[in-house]
Amino acid sequence: MDALDVNYLNELLEQDVEIRERIKDQVSSLDKKTRGMLGILNKIHSTPTDALPPLLDSVRPILRSCCDDSAAITSLVPPNQFWRWKDMWSNSLRTAVYSAALVEYLSSGTLISLSQANEMLGIKNVWVDRFSIAVEDYLHGLISLVNELSRLAVNAVTLGDYEAPLRISVFVKDIFAGFSMLNLKNDTLRRRFDSLKYDLKKIEEGGFPVSFTCWVLKTSSVVYDVSLRKLADSTKHDVNERG
Image (tube, rainbow, N blue to C red; front, side, top):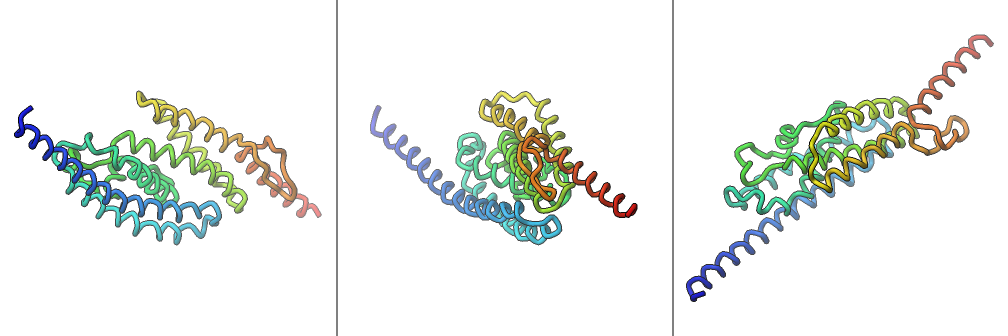
């Protein structure tokens, strides 16, 4: 190996290091925003349903500001090198997708699509060879959404929203059915998909106590307990009328 080859290789290595460090700095900015969104969204578990809109409104400006980071990262990645650098921002985008998906569900009860997630984060189609949401990262974000909704199904009942578990159950079953039709070859993604079964069980048959005026049996499910509450309210109303 002659001196010219060595110098050329050193230049390439130095360029890679420089690009990596600049991308790392910009991804850190995105990480900071996603952590902020996670902190705010975690409050949904202690916020009554009718008080959620202001909470979600406080997340949307942060989501919009992620567009700046998307553009900045894109400007640093050379053309046709998406797959070379994507691991640097995958976790950040998964969290951003999860946050956008949770805001979308709590706002409209619908599932955010991949194209909508890209749009919400300011990621343009022409950037596909440099920066975009990989399909696997989108799916990881949706699994995180289901994980969080299984918690919300429990906590919503304690806050008096007995319809929430029913809505969440239908929504999660639809996502699970969609995942079941995918050919998941990624081991990590497949294992996380398998965990959705436990989330479904937690929503429908989750063993946790919820009170009427005392604790119900620990084996009662969220949906079953909601039905009992409605039945109890109806019976009480009939007794009052007879009285």
